[in-house]
Length: 162
Image (tube, one colour):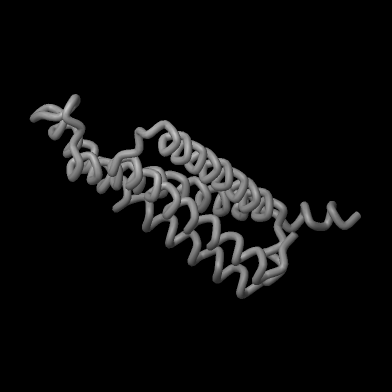
């Protein structure tokens, strides 16, 4: 009976806002990583793929990434602000199933990305192929995904959600 009552608390608005928050988070994180990768590629060019055309592609990607971040990240911030106000007004909303599922799914995805990143980093190191470019990209992934993981993990611990 408890799950029936909990399901009644979830409105279409709740589902929409939580999905919007998580999708804009994912898009922002991927776009930020693409942007960082392009800056790394410009700062440490690959001699095999370098040249004018490679730079033009990088600049085009940078423009698109900045445009995406300028639109999507504020939507994420607005959505999270709206949700946090909703949680303050009604603390039981923190226990919505949609919220829990999306947070744990996000933690799962981030953990897999970090594990894969560390495996790739160690494999490259053991193969003697570690470069500044690769190291900076791996650190970028660890920073972005680690930030997301620790933010949501701390949120879970702070509010004792299961």
